[in-house]
Length: 160
Image (cartoon, rainbow, N blue to C red; front, side):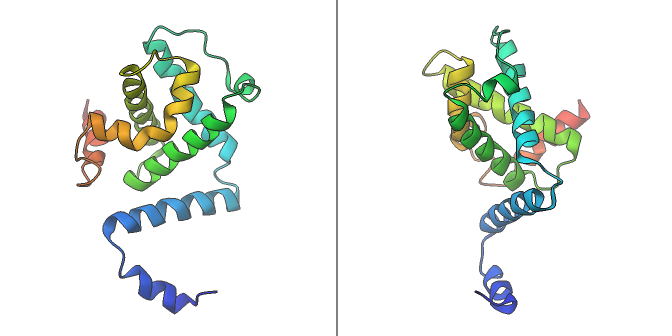
């Protein structure tokens, strides 16, 4: 196992993007460990945003989260929700709880637009496509993630 000093030495060699990714992973791991961020409740929050976005597409009959757990695409939803949460933690590390909800809405909306370009948006298609959040956001906001500009979107929403 690596010593503390060797870990700290290697941190100095990481790029800003790599440090953000490391911080996001550590936040997810520490959150799960201390119980402050239950994975199920985090996934339920992502799914609430999925249901909100589906309503924008005229789909009012998306199943509730408890029912989702019994559907065949639940495993792919879980992987996608993890990816969305990791993306949010990476690019919006200092977001408040209120901003976090807005961020998740933006990310899920981007994925829905991404899906709508190739297939009809449905609870299944949207849940299965959540793992494409990076590509979806890049299409909606080209270069923003790479240049650290995504927080500006949330800042603009806070002004409005």
